[in-house]
Length: 298
Image 1 (cartoon, rainbow, N blue to C red):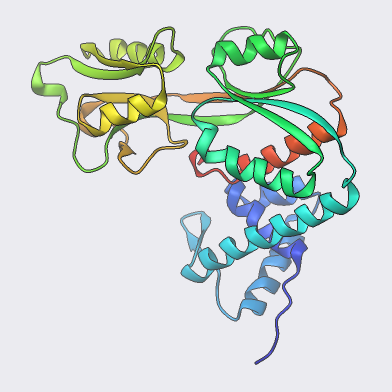
Image 2 (cartoon, rainbow, N blue to C red):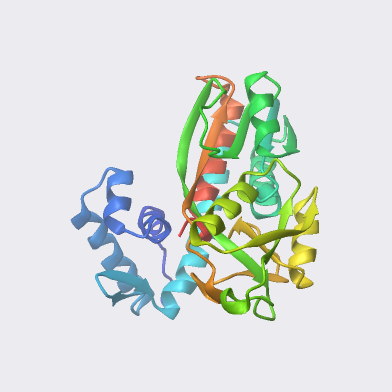
């Protein structure tokens, strides 16, 4: 059997194009021409011995072989980047304080911290899961070095903030059943929410008020675990994003059960310093890379 050695540059173009939803965007990000990336994809299909992409409307979609290739490409690239970081920055030392929304705790934290710790075992990381206001306050006060936080629609109070992208807000219902409510029922929509003040609770109320749909708060919780339990039990629907959803709940289809469409929610990366220390910059790079592959950005 002929041994195939996949080109990591080709795999990087392929994975980035899928993550960005456009190989033209991938070419721009990588500093290559679109024709050069197309040639790379052709080479990859020749090495694979089968099509990995198929036309879908004006764009491209993965074939079954392409989905398999993507999973392996991401693993190979992660190992490559981890090895390079370990050799080039193996002596990194220090202490990093990272803050995240609870939504990202399970979706990002284990993978990001695991990859960083393997490459830089001498760096200590303190991770804090908190809500928007606390994260911003801690970055502004110099008690966090990096933080991921939602765009609250108010002027930022942190020294250095960058908008990373937008994530669709979604109505969340139980995984197994339709929500026990419909727009023509005449009953107020039962909402499940975090304790006030809550950015998404405010967004849910605004969207329902605009649509002329009555609502009531049916359940509040101090944590997302409580939100998921209440939604799974059928106590009401929640408004969140598609990030970190457990199997017991699901994001409802647009306008399912007569619920109004929702806007996109911005995600910001906040830094305490304009030029962070090398260890902080490396953790930020891993965090950005992991976010690019997050399906909820689609």
